[in-house]
Length: 139
Image (cartoon, rainbow, N blue to C red; front, side, top):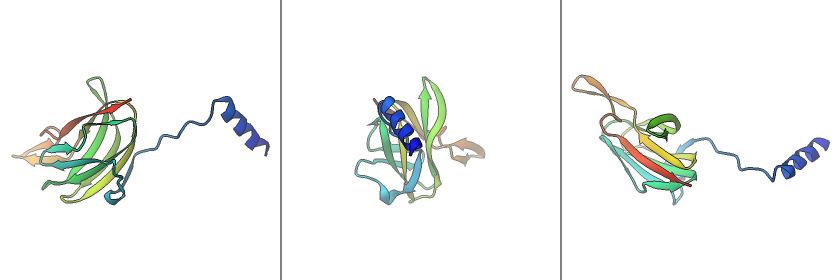
């Protein structure tokens, strides 16, 4: 009991508990909410149902409508520099879909596909072929 009282006292002293930030999760696309942002990836572009979202938990329902495998990487931008990915759906085959649920802070992001394809004997990332989308998270 003393430990419980100490923890409760610490929470009161700090003004209450802060919500825990959720790590990115990839789920079956059937689990998406009505507010999910539809992301359609195909050769070699992304189409989104919304170009931005409010900060917090954001759901991206990623559908591969192309002939090639595609992935969805969400990368936070630091000015003009790419930061580390904050969430990703690994490559999925044509006609497949997944739900990516990620907790996003306000700022600028890029949605990219980093799958590499052979184009005329040269290895090209899908991002280099145009599969990149600027996405804003509003505070």
